Image (cartoon, rainbow, N blue to C red):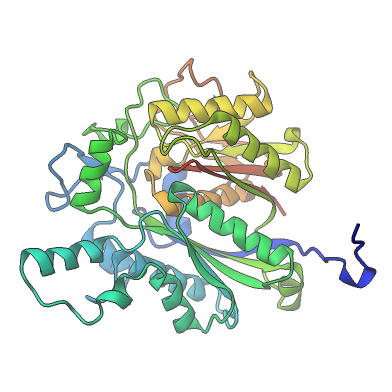
Length: 410
């Protein structure tokens, strides 16, 4: 058997969250979004006529045009997809908030479910319906790594650079990959971006045909995670940005520390493209907890995937009970009740606001919740005070891709 010599032993680094920003329908500042989440508001609203498809989806959690121009003052050109513009402006907001942050040589990892959707749709319509010429920027604007590449070129990020597509778990997997790169010494600093802006007529109609989205026209009763009266998910859009740094890096530059990532796991059901396997979901949670080297009793909050689909929420509830035991009292929050399902952005956005829950000793509400006997977990429906030392973030994507993170308070 090969024996590791002392000089070959791996040094593990701690991985800290040192900065974050977000753009949601609630605002371009995390504090604006936080205040509206605490007050129990919803970002879901009736769709504008130009966004409405023909298959019956009536509401979404979207950023309207006036907000978009206000939240995203830069990079709005015909050569940039909406998702790219959101991401680039979110990084700009981050730099304004953290002027001492040096992004030179940092890594960049983007997690997204749909990538460049709106621009590709517009180009297709122009070329094949209106018979317009093919713009010379088509390839470079629509390649799926364009967002990560643009961030790197603008800010001199010469480190590891990639884009992950694992559907709804993409943002969580992006954080997990960055955590591992830092933990094992490959990177000192990584910018992680979770982004999706896929509110096109084609995509909305596709969700309707899949029968995964709600047909409700009432914004207050549309996205109802784990609720008895849930009827499907509500599509949202937005971007979350998080900077992860090694212990050496934050010490050297005396950076602020908001949380530490201490555990991560990812696996695949390898069974069905849309139907979840509760045993795989339970296993990914167990593996993340084992990676964090903590006990289940130390977890003070579960930031659920909670999409508000009938089958998906029951599967997640069953998986939670397989791990923690039926009748467990671990508090559960489902932010998609307020922000809708932001697909690849959800893992990063929901992690950011769960970190803020730890900071404020506050659990945000899962609004409009009506208990479902088929989902016997402790869903928090009103703002609650609670000391949180560790939280678990779940994300489960189509294709059977499951991801879980463990964050520690500081």
